[in-house]
Image 1 (tube, rainbow, N blue to C red):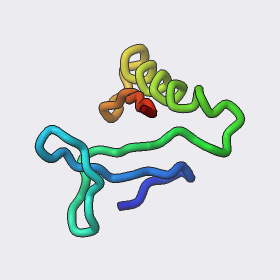
Image 2: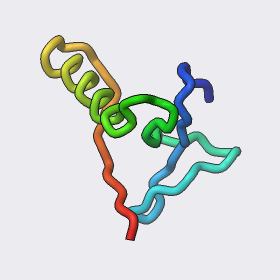
Image 3: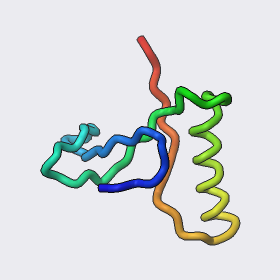
Image 4: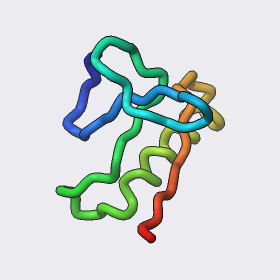
Length: 75
């Protein structure tokens, strides 16, 4: 699998209602892109990408991949 850009990306599969990292022999169906660590506006980069994708599809009618934001909290 090859994706452009320099952001770290993880390939995921859905198993038993939970996401897991895909292994080397399977193709994942989901993509996890953690927030950037070397970007000035770290907290806003995922939201910015999601907003851009939503605007492209909903306002301009450009077909995009399904996307959304997931929030993870430390316990």
